[in-house]
Image 1 (cartoon, rainbow, N blue to C red):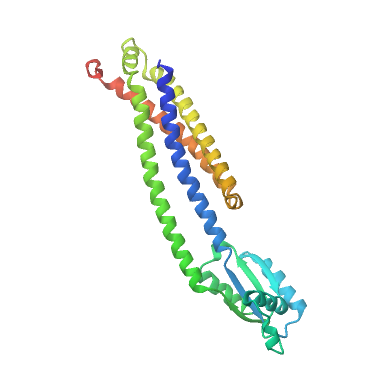
Image 2: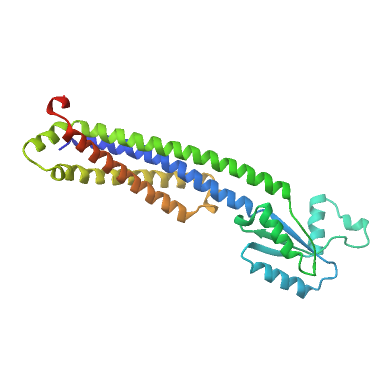
Length: 281
């Protein structure tokens, strides 16, 4: 049907563009994971009244840990707060004072979906209902700026991914159509001897499935090597790796390679069947 080298070139071409698309997808997934990571570093300081008993403090901590919006809740005693401030200041400020002016608090980290000013304000109102809570504070400006910047980055990555997806579809389509060009006379000859459209298209469609699948597997293997290399150089990437999303991405690459390859091949076969013999030259 077709010389093997031409299909090899087609597989290589499709693999490269699928790999490029997969790389953008991987960057988008990492961007989302980084966004989630940074958001979950935002802390709410739940400051308690000075006369709060330890058992009530622990009860509030346990209650917070059970809330769906809480990622982590940790009690910081007034002694621990004083020690932390001493480390930050580089000197023992307690020597200048007769009493510890700090309060016991609970440090709360939220799940990323709740790290926005509207949700935090509702959580703050909820926490202030407790009679042992003196104050709830957080860096509102930091939250607003972080969400605004992450939103901009998401839009930019989304536009790039959309443009690249369109480019990938066009490039793969042209690659397959070019590979099919030398088969045009064979397709027309089969039609002239009475072969049906399905009979003519079937072997080409089967070959297209194999071509698309091999291309996708090569692209996925290249992407896996890239992720391994990047993780070995920057170990922090391993900590934020989203295996579920990466699995979906790799399956999507395989399906996209097969789908576009089959559609482009079938379209080329139909095109040459409709042309007159003289138009093939």
